[in-house]
Length: 53
Image (cartoon, rainbow, N blue to C red; front, side, top):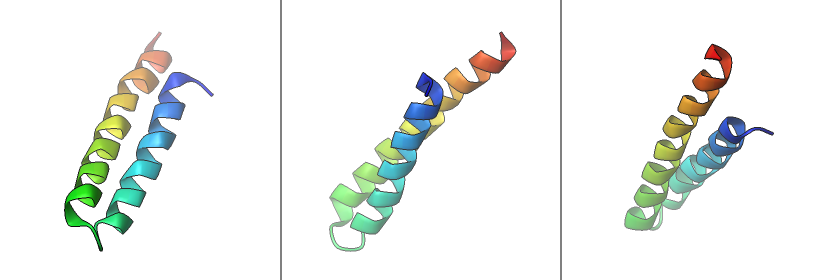
């Protein structure tokens, strides 16, 4: 897998796990969800860069 898809997959798993975890531990789950969303968003840079080249 390339860098963009790897970051997207990791970000998606962290985002979904953060949502699940926030039902019991609000702060930790929220932080994991936010970090996962940031990773998913930053992976778009590498995906768009690949197709525009």
